[in-house]
Length: 416
Image (cartoon, rainbow, N blue to C red; front, side):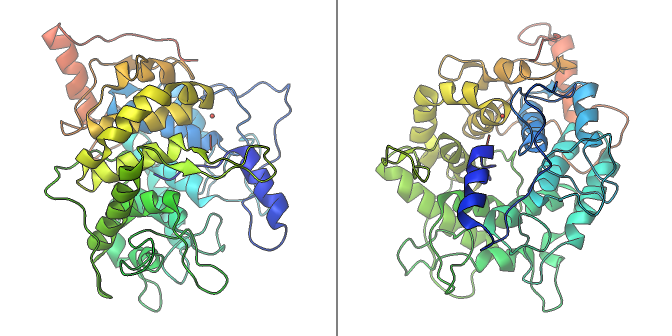
C-alpha cells in the first residue's frame, strides 16, 4: 500500500529536484539529543514520519485486537491542527499557523487510524473535512495542498474518506471529476507496455511510467479501501480489461493483474538504488512487496500473493525490526490479509515486536484473528467513550472462553 519514504530519501529528492517540482516539507528536525515525546512509537527522528508510523501502528494493532494506550492515542490527536489537518510531525506545544506545512498523507492515515481505534471520531471527521476542502480540480490530491495530484496521495485520501462514510464517487469538482477519475487517468491501458500498472504522476509530456508503489496504492484506492484492508475470496485469475470506459473496480483489477504478473516472475518487488550509491544492483523492496500483497488480497487474489508472503516470512523480519513500527506494521497488515500468523511470522512475533516500540497497550487479545473473521471496528459507528464493538467482543471472548485468549499488559518500547 502507500509507503512513506524515509527521511533520507526525501532529503535526497529535495536536493535533486531543487525548485523543479513541489517537495514535501516538514517541521524542523528535533535535536538529536532531544527526548522524544511521550506516547510516540519508535525511537528514530520523527520529523518525516511521526504521524505516519504512529497511525500505521494503530492500524496493525487494530486487526490483532490490541488496544493502544490512551497516552499513544492522545499523542496522535495532539498532532492535529484546528483546521483538521496533520503535518508529518510538529511541536504540539506551538499552534499551527500560516507557516505550518500540511500533509495530506499524514492526515489521511491519521484519520484511518482514529476511525479504527474508535476514539476521537470528531477529530477523524474534522480531518476528512479538511481533506475534502483541499481536493484538486482533477479530483485528486497531492502530497501537500495545492501540489499536483499523485496516485499515492489520492489513494490514501480515498481510504480515509471512505472510512469516515464519505461517498467518494460523489465527491466531484466543478468539471465533474472525482477521486476515481484522477486515479484512472494514471492507469496505463492494457494494450500498452506495462498495461494495467499505474504511474505516480504523468511525465512532462503526459507520458505514464509504471510505478509499483503507485499501482499497489491505486488498487486499494479504486476499490474504496483503506490501508488495513482484509481479504476477499478469489473467484478467478486477474485479467487486464481493455477499453476507454472501465469502472473504477475494473481499473483496480487491471492493477492487480499487473502486480500478480510481476510477482509471478519473482516473489518480491525491487527498488532502484539511491542516487550515488556504490552498488547499482536493484535491491528487494520489502515494504512495497508487503503493500502489493495487501492489494492483491483485497482485490480478491490472495492466492497470487502466497509466494510473496512466504518470501517475506523468510527474508523481511530483520528489515521490519530495523525499520521500526511502520515496517513491522506493514508486515502485520500483509500477514493478516493472507491469513498468515502475525504472531509467528518467520519465527517472529510481529505483534509483540510492534507493541514494544511504544507505550504498553491497554489490552491485548490472543490469538490472531482471521482475515475474514469479525473485525474490531466497522468504521461507521463510533464515539469518544471507549472500545469498538469488535474489540469488546474479542475481549469478551477472551474472558469467557478462558482458553486460547489472554489479556495482558505489555511493555511497548520508524520508515519510509
